[in-house]
Length: 256
Picture 1 (spheres, rainbow, N blue to C red):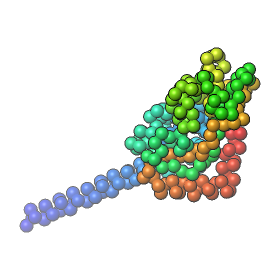
Picture 2 (picture 1 turned 120 degrees about the vertical axis):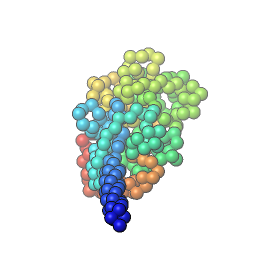
Picture 3 (picture 1 turned 45 degrees about the horizontal axis):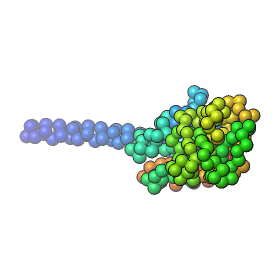
Picture 4 (picture 1 turned 60 degrees about the horizontal axis):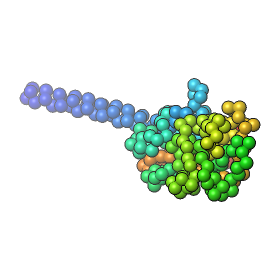
């Protein structure tokens, strides 16, 4: 009888310990799930993402850092090279990244929030150049400098058959130095706000002009995995709130 009671007591203690351990483990998993790992890329994408200082900044970072804590998540910045972002997001190493649907080669594999801001892609020509852009034919036989890893659906047919040549550089700010110092390069391609930001900060504003016509205007969003639907809906609701109450405008005014 004593042996039976001992076994029963031992079993009860063991079950209690296992329950406590399982509860702690579940709590740890839950805590891990409340961290939103947000890609800011190694070089940033100013003024949308700026990584030059000790802390990230920029339009997209400020918006995410405002909204996501309100949803109960801590934001953790992660620097992932552009070429590795999509597979690392799909595999769960990060939870979100700034992206336009139109810049994504397989957008159907991901989920996108509503647009945080809109971006307009334009050409930047040296002021000494006589080139203008109204139609891709204006750039036949020319070489355009672009940031590495970016996808331009409108121009892809022209890049593919080499009617327009594309030259990739690893850092966004380098697109202007290559055009400025290389006779074989004719224009840089960038979002208008990004280009203006880089030129101003690099002291190159007086050397370039931007095309009046752009190749595209896209919504800049947060790209997520498809199983983050509830998060996306909550994010969109809070995004609508800050658009209405002026908090988004206050952020944008810091970078204009």
